[in-house]
Image 1: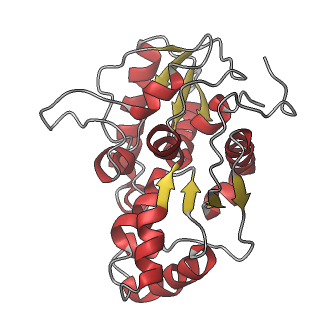
Image 2 (image 1 turned 90 degrees about the horizontal axis):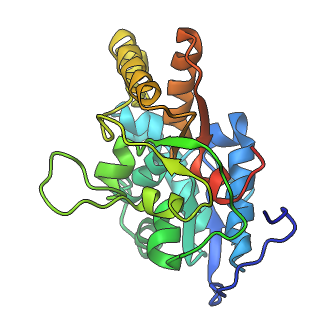
Length: 263
């Protein structure tokens, strides 16, 4: 397996792209290793990645609560930070969904439209824009249960939701299938909400906790050692529940797996 310093890919994807790295506030504060893995992974493809130091919250907590007035300042700052980049890439489907789908209360200037259209969740950027077909440095010899968040599935189209007819697809699973040794285990209810929901886990604590416990038992029942997701917020919720229930499950962001560690 390649070391962290051997960050090269056989296919040159740089193409002069200027990438803005969007690291959500909770990842920056609680899971900085996910932000580091995202940066290292993007740089493996020869991309010019910048990190605006003035970035803060994208405004999602306020927006989710219906407080668009207080969300607006964070949203305007996001536009100012990222308006000069060709693409903005972040390792969090719910936060990317906030930018793409819910910056609609702002005046739709040219900068706002550019940022909204150019903001991508990491998996969809790798899958749809870079069209990555291999991760030669990555190896993960474990059975893995995949959790695509509700925001990623129904807001960004990262996988087919079960309630809609049509051919099955899953962009996260497609990328993970290219990692040596990794075995994706099937689960009974792959696109059920885990109960996090941001403010939902505060306003409906008991329901949220039970949904997370059901999800954890589904993963355990099918022999998963790890749960992997593009959304660390969902993993944070599930990890807390699994620990309290004494379940032997480990939780890790997809960026860490695709980057080949460290774990």
